[in-house]
Image 1: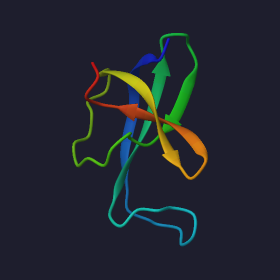
Image 2 (image 1 turned 90 degrees about the vertical axis):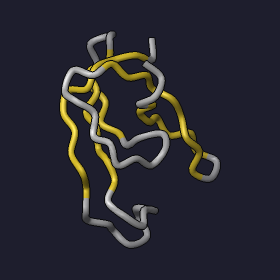
Image 3 (image 1 turned 120 degrees about the vertical axis):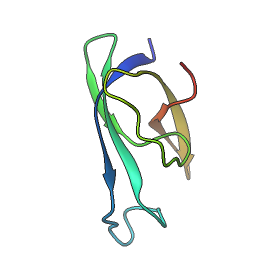
Length: 77
């Protein structure tokens, strides 16, 4: 099940050259999946809105080259 709740969220201002492809600060969200697993990830699309703790979210995937990366879809729930 790709759904869960926000356990924690923060805005990252530091960018590692060659590692992070962001031009401005981005969210990092710790999601507790309904399965009980915890996953730390960024958002599916860039946003300046930080989700509240406990907010329901759905996990989607974004593409980075040939790799599908799990990402939080804040607009799904």
